[in-house]
Image 1 (cartoon, rainbow, N blue to C red):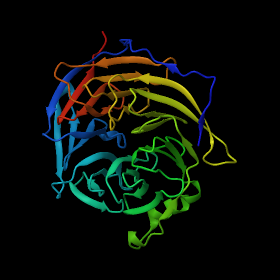
Image 2 (image 1 turned 30 degrees about the vertical axis):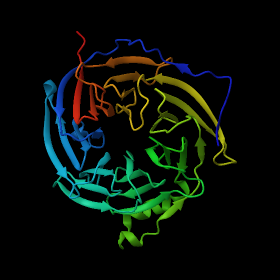
Image 3 (image 1 turned 135 degrees about the horizontal axis):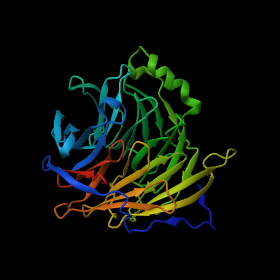
Image 4 (image 1 turned 180 degrees about the vertical axis):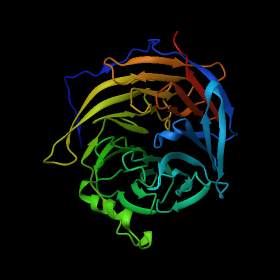
Length: 370
């Protein structure tokens, strides 16, 4: 288990907004009565950077952000099981470049929706419990990972329908896995975190032949020799409570728990002894009233900023790559009072979306500076 090194105090950001960028509400939609747990822009295909999707209840909805704050509904998919409650979604694509939406939730079934024909392309059954997060490998966007209440992370090929790897076992998580993310440039690496209060870094390097094999497999997906990855290369105890969101920032990791802050830290692995090493906590980004679990932050495409909502309906936008951290903006509206489960920042960060417990979607746009 990685220990936190002493002597280096993390730099804590000030909650005084810098006024670097002003945002204003340009739209508010009431999607339904059920909570909306996830919202995501499509960063996979440059033709659709202004397209986003949400999940709430058994519904997946696709929208487009247009000029002047307009939000157009493009598609809506309703799951056949009325008791399904989707918690997460991610954009992916087939090897032919067709945009896919990958959604999962309480049923533990992953639905691959072909947005070209608005039909289910595939359904992945394998997880033994609900799915808390799905993420796409930006370098190979037909690969996705899923984090589950069944204490495992799974790697899937959306093109062939194969479960390639299962990250679970002796060195795996000991409680629900709440979040997972692919490293932005090291194709072999993922990070996962959850209710056992840890963040684990895993390597797929020695299993990569199976990943390649999944693209050319012609037999039934169930016959594929799925491999277990039992031991992470690094385990970090940065937080003392549930860790519900982690994202790579280069080789550093941004993670948050239920203690009103996002933490930026560096994992320092020891090559000789996998799983061990130390953690350097570099910076802290305070987020007041962010003390309930299952609140996830988002970043713009280049990871210049992160936006995170809180349980009172406010959004904090932090500049990520400055030291000390700079609060770009604090967004609040008199009618936005419900917990914000997730935000989505557009490609350049000029639009911020939030999805809320009360079934609303809010759109904030940066005000052009004269």
